Image 1 (cartoon, rainbow, N blue to C red):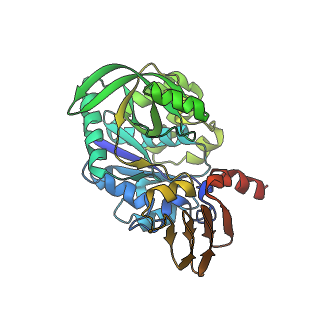
Image 2: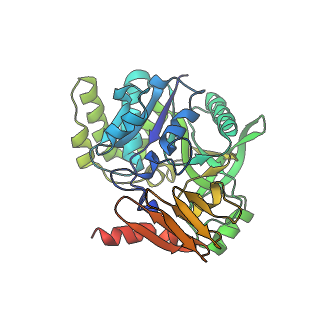
Image 3: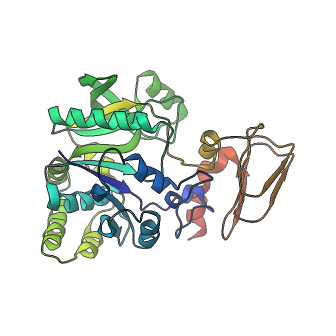
Length: 349
């Protein structure tokens, strides 16, 4: 079976403001690394499928910038959403597009803004998932990250019975999905063997379309109208997005289906969800500071400092975030950086 890769790249990245903005969200940024998060995500799939089978779903505002970063992808494989409607419509749109070419193929879905420290481990996990789908073609497989601390910013997956194993990997039936917990509950989930929900999926195209039909019949009907219009060479994408509900794939399908399965995986995954997270995964200096750009530090430790052009001088400071963006400067304690998204929403009201 052919593999088609879908990369979701329509997010706003508000938790990393003011570096990440509406016009240049975090998936287009490199954060001092060699490649942007989007480019790195695409390159991780290079050994799995051809570029003609890689699709990026983004928003109309940044579609041209996505194309500039990914000139090796066919332009028609960059699917632009006119309105953000969360992950379920995004995945449905891509599935409808792929089904016109190969309805029996496998579809892998990845967010565009994650870091993977062990790309080879990532590839091995995907190859195991592809093998598992040959035996269990009806399953919706999600990669579950083995937690190393009680994270409150992620949802959790509770695995059940083992369905399939090979080469060090195991495929489990999913018992249930848990919402983002408090710290005590997160510790409890870890002790129970739960996994972080990383939002990475593999399934057959015909399988996910059938799951949409069963669990979101209204969306499915609108999707089939969109698919018919694409088949006839007409574009009704705007009509689909105007009508469709804004809902995540977890709420729309994964928490309702009886066919969810998970593969525990460890390949240095991080969703770069805050500047504190960046401080934990990027290389630090000798005093645990993570810096980018023109930065001078004096008697300071544990800081995350990014300069976009101006010299930033930090003195006698500990565990701060200091970020120079295009239009604003952010200063806050590292442990407050998870609240930046809420602050951004207040400012735009």
